[in-house]
Length: 66
Length: 206
Image (cartoon, each protein chain N blue to C red):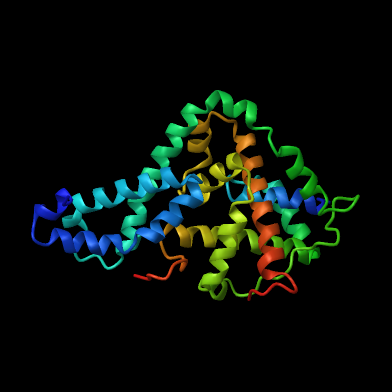
């Protein structure tokens, strides 16, 4: 069984490379029993979403919206 | 002294003024990635000039800011590439800076069996609502400054500029494993900070 720490590495790497079938399987297995790692996975997706928003120039971080 | 663009055509001054309205946004965007006010200003200046020259091409486009950000992205990538060539050797030596601190901080999140300890990842709720909140972006900016310069550069190249890890490895002369480790550190650091400063209990956010 993967540890939470190992899962955090795999979740991060899944954003940068294609994981092997075995890695994905073991990660899914872990998610089934670990709500914290599921939260972690959603947090990583959120970070990517935030950066994309920034990249598109759609982050509302100033007063002169346009 | 008048700007050359002001005399180019009657509409040029208006066009410049319209583009200038986006300057502060663009500077903040560039600062996140370059971390150097002078370099950020340079990149934005070049972007606005390039935009002015290519004005005809964006005429009628509704998303001017998206278009400008696209140009700026290229300018930032150029800057980062030049920077990485300059610091290729010294960078290798300096790369270890802060590394041990990072690892110690992340390790503290896990217990002896490498499962989550006391600071467990919480549910961050509806992403849309958060991303529309101006104050969230202030926190995001602040948190992104906590990463070491090396880690931040790799993270921004990957996530904001949208380069592949292969491209980043080539640009910075690092191995894929090194790249993944840096990205991991960046994400862990950013999420920890956001968890504490924005999403956490007692934070004034949300």
